[in-house]
Length: 251
Image 1 (cartoon, one colour):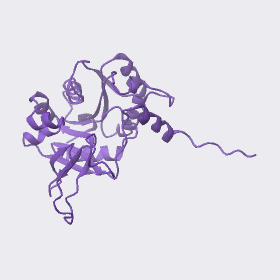
Image 2: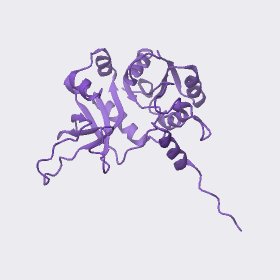
Image 3: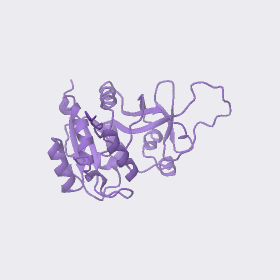
Image 4: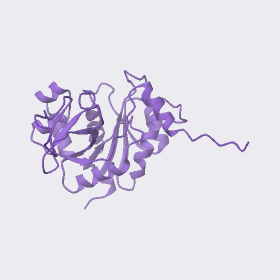
């Protein structure tokens, strides 16, 4: 039997950010960026808990103010996955873990719920993919994936995959990987304690560690991607999208 208390969305968040300094604390919308993401995740609090895995008291304060749980983690941890595992170790009752980045204020919560449902139905690792946007095939920052007939990932790459020697083959198109992950506790524990694998190091993509160890990664379809915030331009665009429409004057 499962209960909401055995699952959690865990949002790994650190204060430092190279391309947009302290981006999670930017509050030009009226609230910190991190709060926007937390509030969307809290829409699922009847299905699972929401835990912020943060590295400073300022981010902890933002999380507490939204009503999320908080785990303070070591600022020196190498990755978001390590931060998720640190939070999971502090809550041994958790069986299902969903990793959502704190800089995704427009995350599709219905898609996150499907990730949780897939875990509860027996998947070990679950992630999301959307149609590949025009021009993204040759963009190394857009991670591509291909999957097998069972809906599991065959490979993730920053390079264009597959190499299309024939243009008339249907069903071979890559998809855009969306970096939301669901894991069982046991699978994340194995991942967190394993050394980085050769393909993972080559592509600089953590998820390849699962494939190199023979772990099936279930890929769920998402109608579209949702933009994360990495740069000042990203943040400005987000502010424009959430701004109320201008009022119409009676004059």
